Image: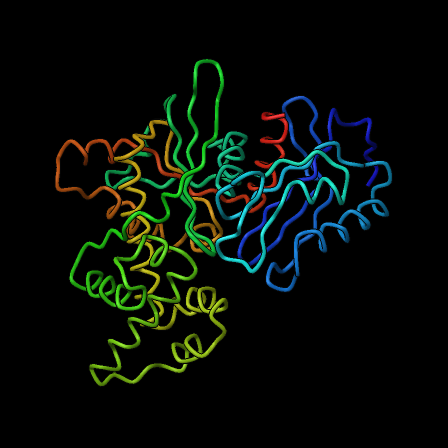
Length: 353
């Protein structure tokens, strides 16, 4: 790496801590541009805390990039921030900003993971297909991106929701626990899935129970039980998914969806439930600036979202005509850059400092 510290106005240590992956990066800011300088990825479940991989990351960064010491640190985590601490919702440990400042002597801010994604969305150009895929409506239109709220909905290990608003002359990215609204079922099969989940959870399930990685695992288990109750024999591919470790099932089901009927049905229902969640949040937020589908699942399965306009046809449905009109004009986009949370954390560190 030939860049020096003087090449940048500021260097930020950015982190994105999810239930599956812990991603860390040094990001340089020059003017309004953020550049990823050095990054490493760790397994959240294999680490005892954030301090362990963070210490190794900084040691390696000092060797690879002498002089690139970060001046600010911003860590995003999957959970609400309470008194400078995040109790991760899908991981065995939490994050404490005061402990990180004590251990590494870097001013540290914690933000919700979808606050980071929201700050990252502010850096994206919807006209660049390498950053964004715009989903056509059923009439072929894309919707006009206007000033106003931007809603971010992202299915990954869990289901994250955030939104961006302009308050006077300042743009703010705000967190939400919208991933836990009720699961928006739409036909007899999804209502049966809802009842199946309710028996497991003891209460009406939230959207995350169907629209997330764990949601895909739930869906294929439900569909497999229903198939076997009808006397059907599961294919080797479907059986292989169900016998895999829980965290591996979503990727395996998606990979087999092109050739296996049960896996294909799983992914089709997942996409349609995702669309209903996005539609409900559109009615709540009225996001004239668009709905951004973040999280890794949409980006990795883009073709299934686009095929037969599967996502958008379900997104546009409503029992009220005026809501249909709102949905028909709202732009919907898949975020393709997997590093968006890291860029967003860096942008948040600078914006909120």
